[in-house]
Length: 198
Image 1 (cartoon, helix red, strand yellow):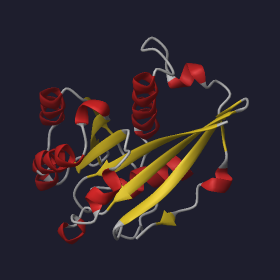
Image 2 (cartoon, rainbow, N blue to C red):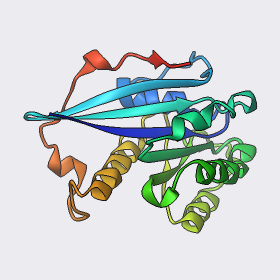
Image 3 (tube, helix red, strand yellow):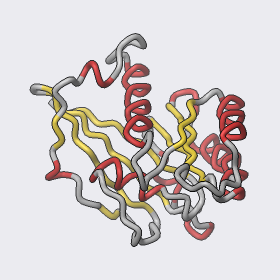
């Protein structure tokens, strides 16, 4: 039995969305990652006994020229990771624009959203932890400081999103969590290759 979860990654170009996704799916970091053109799709399969949960993650291009394409992929999204870079103040300031775009396309009350501050391993920050926390509080969403390079909080961020989605679906209650429900999770690495859709 298979169930699917669709997660979007939104944010400006070069904030590290693809690197976060690669860290989650492959548990690796690469310095030489290509900019996403359009949308890239990857998945990670979690299994427990006979059940499979397919976590589909759609990595969207952050560049202005691709913003017309991106909303097409918002349909049926159940989770959204809004990503900015702590070393790029503009990417933080653009989070509001991404939220506005999201609200225009889907009912945000029906979607689980997290705010992700990436590149937290870099000491020279332009955005403080407090600024990120305040923005997350403004929108009443969870906040994560992640590093695709070190892996800090990457798995936890995706796990939180999946958990929120399963709670919305009524598949687990809020006192449970994905880790407890899937104690014997095994990853099927055969289905984790990049899949370009544009």
